[in-house]
Image (cartoon, rainbow, N blue to C red; front, top):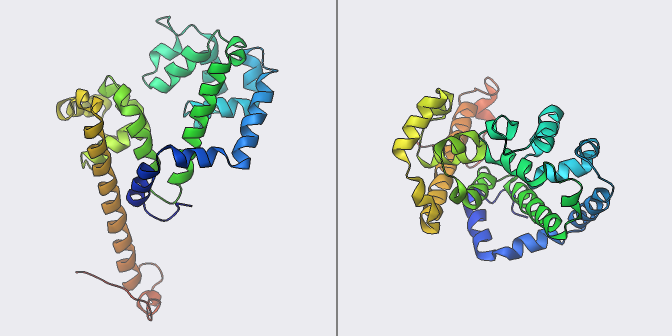
Length: 259
């Protein structure tokens, strides 16, 4: 529905629609079917190992915590689901990314009881819907998913290390500060020291400041996209994508080139 409108335009549309857009997404038959399937599956899950063996249920849970890309890391997930997250040497305590900590805190030592708790299950479902909705609207709109994720989560961040450990948050912060892509290649401690000087994390508690930062990020993404598109057109004209056909392939098209 929103594909190709551009991240900034779609973001502003979603702001006006509020919860309506998410509700419409949740009411889709495919989403309802996935939710009902999850509810049925967790009735049979009585241990962390049972969850790890049920790929569909596991994928739903991980997506709820924005960790769906980790589904193949069985060893790590087993530790998160079985170790006491309050123990100093537990994996959850050694990982900076708060998403892992939330997963461990929510489920370690709490299966199957957690899946028998209606309030907890509804929370998982709501998170799943939110995360898959943002992924859906982000398709074809570069930067939108990250912007929505940033807006939802940045107020909960308490350290620069947490930002750097989270791909989406660190991406938004780098773009929002207009830092070059090469910044991400620097040593972790170098990035940390720089951002600690540049960022006042208390400002992210202010919704107005978060909104301005998000809009700045979207502007930077849009500018990068426009620059990339212009470069591609220039390469075509110069034959960069097809030898001498570069210029003739554009004949009959309306092309504006600013030099």
